[in-house]
Length: 209
Image (cartoon, rainbow, N blue to C red; front, side, top):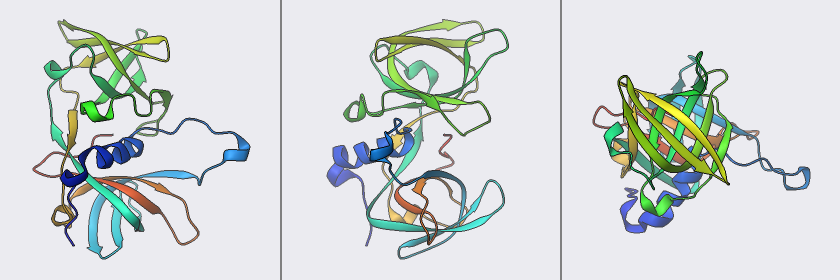
């Protein structure tokens, strides 16, 4: 059955928001299954199993949970980032101080506020993910610097020219073809990774997070 995100756009996008945004820390009594992020390319897709060759070179079978959600990403531009937008920015500390962006995800309005905060992220060693509202965006000689706000705090992040900037887009099961690049936030389970959401690359655009 073809799975399309559009008929339940808000519900689906909210689910995907939880996929691409790190979860806030939980208390011991509220422990959730351990999370793992799978980045790689599809080997095969069959029924409820997605076989993926990870960026580390390992091939894993990802079980797709009942009711799993699927989306893709579409290209956006740094000039699309406007005050009031809700964004997710993976970044690294810069040698000269502050943070430099590794990628930017501009969320649709329906997802504003989901997963707000700044957390450790595993895109690269020492990277973080900041999910926040843009307070201002200033164009400079070598790119753009944005000031984002979350939970009463502010953070300045430089976005160098050439940084991948994307937004969420629809996808169907037909996009799960061998070679397609995926980002899968999954739960560790005894039988292997269990996924409730999948982001797949299409039309030459890949999930950069």
